[in-house]
Amino acid sequence: MASILHPSSFLSSSSSSSTTTTPKPPVPPPFSRPQATLSPPTKPLLTKLTTSLTATALAITILTSSPPSLADSSTTYNIYYGTAASAANYGGYGGNSDKKASAEYIYDVPNGWKERLVSKVEKGTNGTDSEFYNPKKKSEKEYLTFLAGFRQLAPKDVILNNLALSDVNLQDLIANADGVTSEERTDENGQLYYDYEIDGVAGHSLITVTCAKNKLYAHFVNAPVPEWKKDEDTLRHIHQSFKTVG
Image (cartoon, rainbow, N blue to C red; front, side):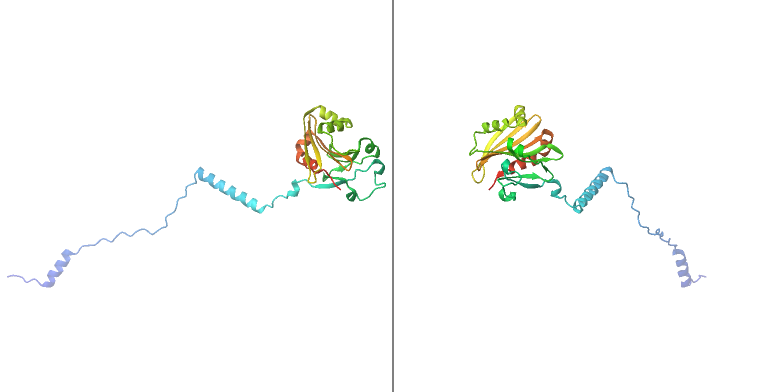
C-alpha cells in the first residue's frame, strides 16, 4: 500500500537538506590612524635650514639696529680767520679785535687740533702768522707764513726755492724727496694759486702760495709718513680750504 507523503514533510525535508550555515564575514580590526614615521633630515637639508635661519636672523638684526651716525666717522672743522698783521700790530695793537672782520685769509682746522701761539720775534723773522697742530702728533700741523712787498707770483720753481731758503725743514724735505709736483690754478675771481706736493722719505708736505694785497701768502700742511697715510683725506681737505679773503 503506497504511503502518502504530507507536503509539510517534503518541505521540512527539503528545507532541512538545503539549509547551510553561512560563515560570518571577518570583523575588521579597529581603525587606527597610521603613524607617520619621520626620518632624520639629510645633511643638505640641515645645511639649507641653517643657512635660512642665519639669513633670517641677520635680516632681523639689520632691520632692528640703528644705522651708524656719519658724525662718528667724519672729521669736523673750524674756520680760522687770519689777519696777517705785522709784528708791530701783533696781538691786536693798533688793529681791529674782530679777526673775522679784518681777516685776509681763511683755512679749515680739524676739530681737536691746538693753536700754537706765534711770538712777535718769530713773526718778524720768518713771517709765520698762524699755526695749528695735532696734539696726538705735534709734527702733524698746518701753518701760514706771509711776506710783504710781493705784487705778483714769480715762476713756480723760483717761489719754492725762495720758501726753502727761510725754512731748514723744507730744505731737507725737498733734498730727500722721492718726488715734487707743482701746478697752478685760478679761483672764481681769477686769483692765481700755486700748489706744491712734496713726497719725502720721512714726511709729506702740501703747500699753497698766492699773492694778494701786496703780500705773498704760503700755507703749509705737513705730516710724517705714518700720519700722512692715516690722515691723507683730512690733510688734503685743509690744504684745499686755504684762500685769501677781503
